[in-house]
Length: 340
Image: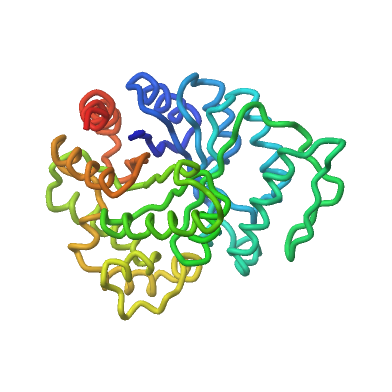
């Protein structure tokens, strides 16, 4: 099982130091979100990935996650091909449909999201393999390629991972993805959903080995006091409020209206109300927390459910504990996970 880290820092200098520690403690990869909400004080994803590529040598580098709405697929294909010259065979292009906070305020329409993502992935893949003798063509509803090709060919392989939850997105994952990268699952809902993906892959003539099952999970490697537990539980409940399919798979969420993340997170009252309906027990089972042995046990449950790559999200760890948590993960938790 691979163990990776979702970078928490928000300045280039801090990100470089955080990534240095991730490499020092021999984690498998680092991930950074594509977050562009107004006044967020958050650096741009592709610039960050370039900095990380230049300042690391072994870690895999992934987007957690981007989409095909803010940047044309050609831009992403070109950017990742360029990055691959710096970090060959270390990149992972994590894609999703689009959550809203980085779109609505800029007039980017959040419609036909699954179709746009599927077409965007086909466009990116076509651009990467195109040549002057065999240029790329695509006649989609939203994207079009005519005698096209990436301005730069990738160096090595660039796998595409998809964050997916609902039936349409799960189908796209089974059809086109090299990896599945959801968050906020319980071990059981993860297992059930992965089995659906596996079944669909067979229908598309694909083998299970062609897809790496991943999971992003809230990480707090300490026995939380009441305040800390309330904080991470509240975060987990707000995550689950935007993922009704996970609630339904767990036997909950009967009153959830079935809205998706982009329809929820821009409406704070609605989001809070839906989060309050999420059972504490369900939210708790999605978090990796507790002492070292408890964290190992919780990660092991996901491993047993089929997860092969855990991405730990340290966003709720106190800043002064961040480096310590990283060291605990690298020196004490990861070796035991690998030994399971």
